[in-house]
Image 1 (cartoon, rainbow, N blue to C red):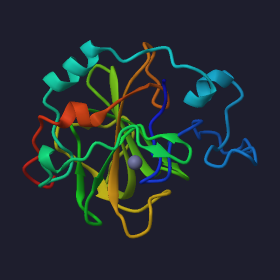
Image 2 (image 1 turned 90 degrees about the vertical axis):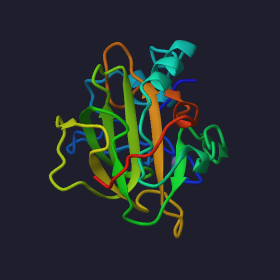
Image 3 (image 1 turned 45 degrees about the vertical axis):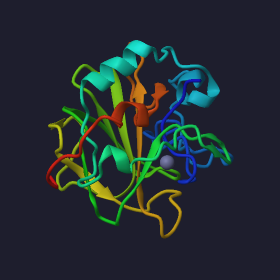
Image 4 (image 1 turned 30 degrees about the vertical axis):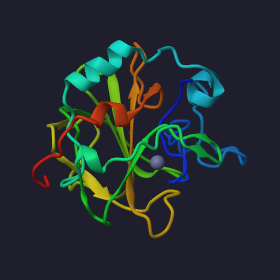
Length: 216
Ligand SMILES: [Zn+2]
């Protein structure tokens, strides 16, 4: 299993970015809804986790590494005891490779740790999303269904733990009336690319964590 981030359904979206969207001039295949065009220079297997295994696997050492970072729960006021493990929930298009955290609209979404904004991406399923790499580019944190980004947020920008990245919303395939943050964590390949990685269950990583104390 190696996939990508995105949601599946309680959120009903799933697999957020499939192919990197980048080239507007390439026409998106009619069948592949959320995936905009696939740049011809990219190997087909690199486009989506569904098209082939990623070149990396999650190990117990990764979980221990992530747990040791004591990541911050990205929504103010949400404690580990409030989290429900939704990773692996059956969804219409496969298992859910993320953690859904219900929250009121426009709740601030805060970085789980230091890092950099690797990609700001909009997909049909994930809606408005942010991909953050950790400082070593070993893992990516993916925040989806956002209602908006933090003012001035740009790709390549450094982030500090608990810095505002955006706001909880209903974009993408988030069910109406059920705003939530879809949070995914995935292990990047040796050559880090924001759209590829092996999913880690965020619940296992955050169950000993605390929330950021403030909203930004
Ligand atoms: Zn989700």
